[in-house]
Length: 71
Image 1 (cartoon, rainbow, N blue to C red):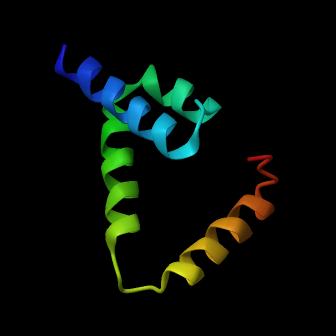
Image 2: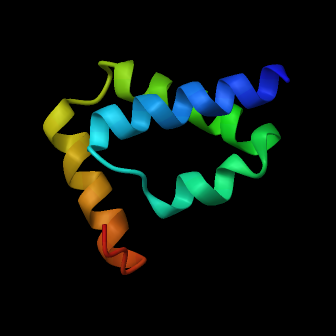
Image 3: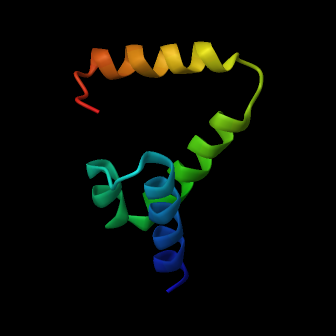
């Protein structure tokens, strides 16, 4: 019950941030035990100021290119 609420909140936050639902969230939503900690980890990475924001974005783009991510 609580897991389902957490998944709904995470999906709503992602939809608000990205403007649409993305495929990985649909997959993760069926496994809340993985999705919730992953979302917490992602949020912590975004908030840290140890690495400059521009470098974080560059690393995300490079990682997406390496795995041929269309997003």
